[in-house]
Length: 71
Image (cartoon, rainbow, N blue to C red; front, side, top):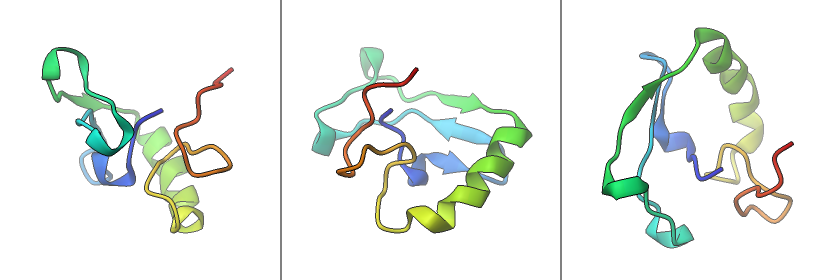
């Protein structure tokens, strides 16, 4: 829920978990791991990225804040 588009590496299919001081969020133990994700997910995110130009969050709420109510 705190993933920025800048955390995604589309060419290597990796998501970085990074500190977000502007959101008041810090990863566990202050570690910033790189997590491999499926190519299928990366392909889907590439499709929605152009429609998200106004928000730096990958999964924002209506008000461009982190989405808290994932099913």
